Image (cartoon, rainbow, N blue to C red):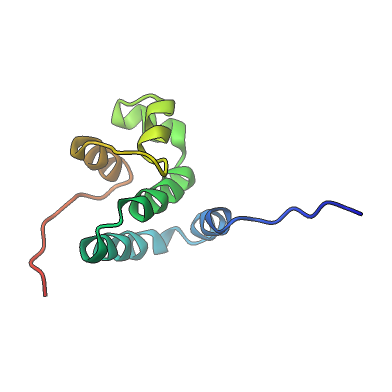
Length: 103
């Protein structure tokens, strides 16, 4: 019997955003809108981890001033990054955190 290698949802998302980088902005907006509604930081961090992998963990770590391990830990499912770390990550991928009035 041969062993099957299944791709995870994270891997599928990562591959999609590598092929469609123009979709990253819409994705980021949606994940932050969902986070504003449900406060599920694990989902937000998992989504940011996908984008970080697309952009390159080592490059982002260097840009944020974090170690590669520190960045991976901050974006892990058990991560609890400080706001300045999240801000640095968002800035390093070309975006900014901006408050928006709830609708």
